[in-house]
Length: 194
Image (cartoon, rainbow, N blue to C red):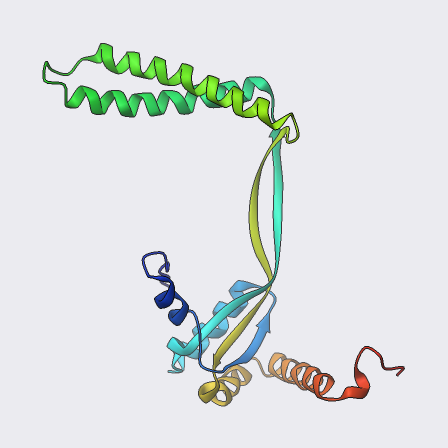
């Protein structure tokens, strides 16, 4: 498996790469692994997978609280990040120093960086007014993954998916037809009394 980020591309090229002509659904999966398995099956059966797109839908953000944020942790984090920055700057200055490499100048920039980092972190924390006194990590995840292909390949793709898992394909097709009927029948809309 190989994935390449679109960061190096311009906005227009990235948009073109991440879009399909008249996309049609081949199925909706509960996990990315299941969607990936379907695309792998299509690839194994010489389906033009360059015209396939896996779209994560129903996004949600998860935030895991990892600990309490105290003044001590703020200061320690500021000291460490400032020291690293000071080490980097000190090494650069020492390498280009015409009088030779001096460890004392490197050590002084590390100390200065640590002090500056601690002050900067403490000031930043003070400005928040204690509104966020915890640390956390966040992740955006999808709850469903839809496999799409261009309209000209949809029928062949659905045939292959049906061969891969006939029961799941029949259930997905029935659900797709029900949703399509609901959208086209005005009597089954939200105002209906059925």
